[in-house]
Image 1 (cartoon, rainbow, N blue to C red):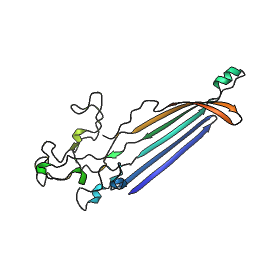
Image 2 (cartoon, rainbow, N blue to C red):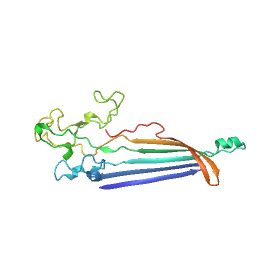
Image 3 (cartoon, helix red, strand yellow):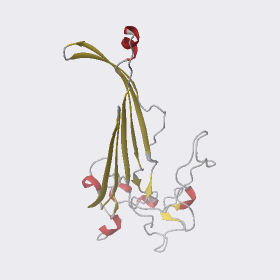
Image 4 (cartoon, rainbow, N blue to C red):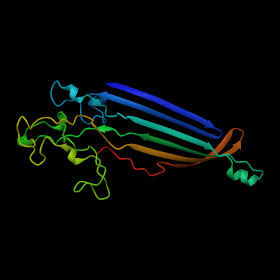
Length: 232
């Protein structure tokens, strides 16, 4: 496997405001992730044809190309001569964290060949689907007879063709050396939805005695209710 990455960070202190951000641009390539045994590697370690391990060399299952994390803390300043106002509004702080990263890669596979009780199944080697030239990979809109009402399609169904006809279990177009070939879509050539999360914290510190204090927190996870979806 190969990994290349660029890491950058930025921190700034502006009076009672603290800001920090970290960004990583990276690319990971391998033939099988996690030895083909762990959940990340859903396609297994075997190749479509013996001696063609190079067909598997592509994006790692966990290849996150862009990864951004940031946080900010604001110690809310307050000064007053009134004892009650100081008791109510002093020692408050507001903070927010944000996490954003691009989607994980995955493969588009054909149906397994099952005609006449013979054939190659997904458990012994991935059968990649064929790409349709000229068709966009993604179609982020409702698709008739495919998507459920209120949802959107992610991949374009017209961009891929199964090497095996799902209705017959035989090769699409009939069993022949020309039709019964592994598809050219390749391993981990498409990507799932990106991930976005933002958490908000509101805290109040109550001094008790000497170096002891009591803290009150209000925490809002995924504060903006942003949906994050699994791979298609």
